[in-house]
Length: 166
Image (cartoon, rainbow, N blue to C red; front, side, top):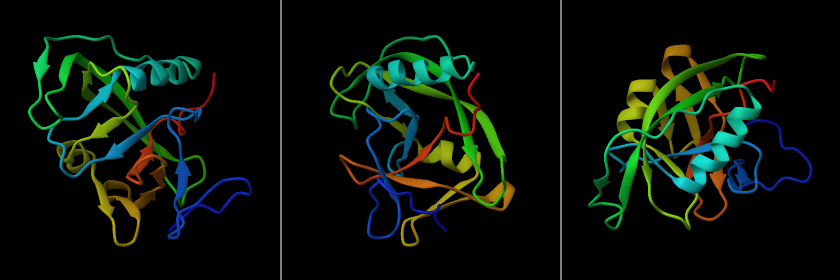
């Protein structure tokens, strides 16, 4: 279950488009099975804010207090943001679903990523099948396109493509 391959783009052996989130005009979230709280870096937030602003979608302000994470090498969260998520459904033309999720912003100047926690995936109804390289959206009985992050090979979904430009 993959989108058609486009000339000039790179793909994994299993058919996932390889993307570089820092250079792409889209916004991606990594589906992280080991992450217990969704989080993103400031560089990711800066990129996402520009993309969503261009589409007329508000990017939530930074709120809350600092937190120190044990699992991400002692990373410090500078607060939380409401992040818009819009998933394009693969088998339907111009069909998508959207949600807003709270994500902790990490004070990491040299990284560019958003990790979508296991809790977020379950709540949103996303079912990642690594063996098949698919992401099933249970409530819509449809699939969301998966991508491979160039630097890590991790699976990600695009959370901005389904929102039309304004």
